[in-house]
Image (cartoon, rainbow over the protein chains, first blue to last red):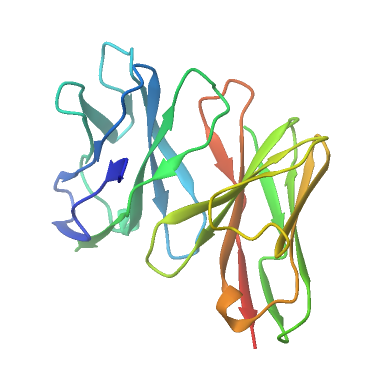
Length: 116
Length: 115
């Protein structure tokens, strides 16, 4: 069963606009962590934001915020004031359990294109 | 911040040869490292978990004799693709957690092309 689902293969946004990238997850473990990574065409994986399952507030990092809806098992990434440099592939990922150094399972990814 | 260095960034080899990819944690010790494989415009698929001083843990369907992993020190893990074939051509990327276990840092990846 797919544990992390990103249903948007591609998204387009106008420069300076906000965009939401969807992510849903499936786990029976009450302890888990949710991550978002950006992968530009160069291939490097850039960490964007982290949300723990017990965190009460939505995580924010600069222009990135994570809309965490635990009951819906969703962890959408919101990018505000999009820039041309935001064009990349974005991955949602989950780490299950209390082990801080456990493996990450990635979603299928969403290719974001920012238009000028 | 934590940095993971991966070499080489690109390698082209003939079918039947072996290729070694190195992954180093530069300013922290990593008892565990992860090796992922990625095809163009697809997700990262975990191949194996590399454990310092012990055998790697391979994911289901990954041939351990084909993809040899060695984690001889707290800062170095290597992936050797043995007797590479064209179907092994892919982007391979390693990763390691920072000390706090909140950020998984990735190497820059290795694009392997087998002719």
